[in-house]
Length: 133
Length: 403
Image (tube, rainbow over all chains, first blue to last red):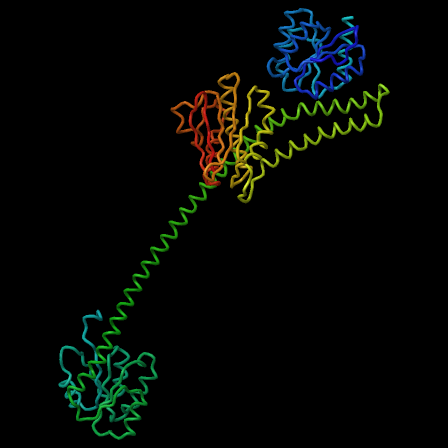
């Protein structure tokens, strides 16, 4: 919910949705370190994610699937209704694979399996942000 | 020949038939069976065939005299105990009497004999004889009883062995059920560990990569490096602790011990909290008075796990939203009480009496072994001498453990 890297005039904006606070904090700080110009917002569940999306219209959403209150799939569906061209990178554990099919119809750009290989996340972000900008 | 009904045999020995006749006249009544012998040799022969109550033995006889006959009778084991009374006409010197007693006589009578005295002396030995005979009979009877007792005893022994075997078979069966239940619980726990590890593994991965990232970005001071290592090690310790909990949970306690209920509850809940959260089931703990329980903490944990899993499964099967399970513990009248209360709809009143039966399950085929609650009751009531009961409460069911 806080802006991790509040640069006054950011080239691109990113939303990270993840319920585990430590994973969320680490992911955000590492992404911020690697992409100092990105404005990063973070949310602990899908419901907060939708609210932040509505407010900031980020270029890219990185999201977990299993979360309390509202899971990643439901959030993606609601965000798609706000903006049909919204793009997602899904971070998921192996057991969530059955969910992936439901994501296919939602225009997911990339899946990254947990434990995350940060290099893969970087290149996925680069690909999507560059495509946007 | 039955001993009881036969007359008492008395051997009379004299070389003179008229003396024998005189003895017969003196003793002749229905009580005695008088057997004649006219020489020492014949007396010996007779005494080998028949067990006499007494021998009336003449001293002066041609060939083998009375003393010699008595001596030979004493030497033969069969007649050693045979009471001998010497009856004599002239041999009344102290020397002869002494010789008579020495050769084993119980009495030494010199003629003329007072009939009443002879009869009463003979009767004494006949009474002894019949008493001995009665004793023998009783002894035989006792022996028979004893034999019967031995038989009964050995039958009892066999029966006991059969029952012990049945008990042993039951115990083995129970052991098998316990094993099944433990395996099922282990499967559940393994599943939970998978859930519990996914997040920290991801964190651990990120922490390690963060060190690399900082180095790459030229921002890796020794402090940052140490911070990254400490963070990674913290997560690693947590993962290690998870396996320890899991392993401890599956170790059987050998001895009863007093343990803190709250701690056992906390350690069981720590193993499943993550996956319950994933399933959207709230777990609440309320405790008061730090209750202590005597028993086996790991088995208690298994029981608790069974109860929680049942509530979880029921909630998921019935699609209950906002499922909530509350574990309460307190002390009451010297006992520790733990309740597990859910809000997932309770137990069909038709099944309330059956939930603790072995192989009773309402879960779909392949989803319940039907031994969880049976073994839980077994653990609490048989191994820990407590009580495990269930009742429906508004909105759900409440299991109660009292130990």
